[in-house]
Image (cartoon, rainbow, N blue to C red; front, top):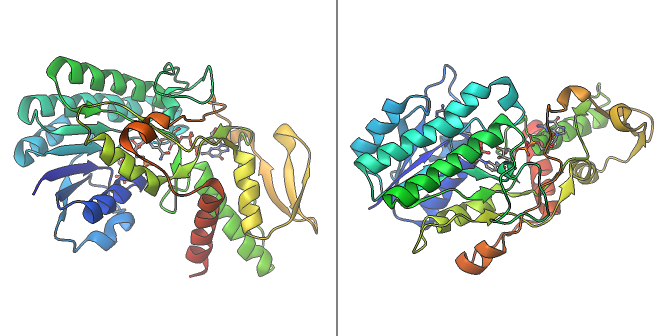
Length: 343
Ligand code: NAP
Ligand code: GDD
């Protein structure tokens, strides 16, 4: 039985990855968690009694904890999903973002090189590395033009992964994953903020309660959104090729934040009218109740205006495909949040 370390298992991707690996492999999975004052294991609670899944302690901000785990376990695979993953937060915590998203990757690579050189390593790369894009769609050849401390840290990690792969002949890769969402998405990210808020608004409208107004920043930003569950197979395929290579995983479709909002309102059967523009834009129900407004507080110091991925290489060389489309993703997220709030 092979041993796989997965970091970030309390988050969205890590928890989906553990489920994917339990279902599709016979390997033993070690889910790395850090100690927090208040435990946040909701995404993995259902896996607690799974014999092939075990939790281990590891903090990406402590090099010793990563080294010791690699020495003790001698893993066959190391999948690093842990990160300070909130782009907007990376201006508030640039040093912590750099330490977690870049320095920690160097510590993992060093531990693998020194103590488990046959271990295959995946680091979670991002379309945010393409940043201020020069053409659309973006494929593996698009230059790195990060716009945030988060994007810069992921670019640094990408160079480190390549340098270690080439210098020490490690199987080390960093895919470029475009935005992927789902029912386990953190509430700060725009898609989940929308699905959760619109479900709350729907419940308030139906029960004549005070409307909790949704406030968003740049609703003209365009993203390439997929279902996180569809990406797990792509990551596993990337780790199991004859030779290590980085691939783009994406949907190839671009939608604005406004489109995501309006598609969610459609799912909730809320008809609306719009008033004002730019910083002053607001949406009202047809009987005049305010449900949404632009709030410049959510604008970023620098923005990535558009992202659209070209995943044809991953499709051609690894045979990877995605299953859920944009409308399906919005529906799944809205219905899950509505069920959660009315349970
Ligand atoms: P997420 O839900 O925010 O999960 C992040 C995970 O990292 C959490 O489990 C968190 O643990 C853990 N973590 C943070 N700091 C840590 C530390 N110092 N030590 C140990 N664990 C730590 O993120 P996600 O959406 O699943 O994304 C997974 C990875 O893919 C991230 O690297 C992200 O940057 C990258 N990525 C995501 C997307 C996307 O659209 N989702 C796209 C491209 C790349 P706690 O619960 O303890 O905080
Ligand atoms: N979070 C948030 N909150 N974003 C908003 C809001 C708001 O109220 N209003 C508008 N937006 C816009 C942001 O300015 C951005 O252009 C877009 O919505 C998406 O924001 P997020 O959902 O926070 O995601 P992201 O694209 O910045 O980053 C995500 O995707 C990256 C891959 O491209 C994260 O998952 C990163 O970890 C990931 O690397």
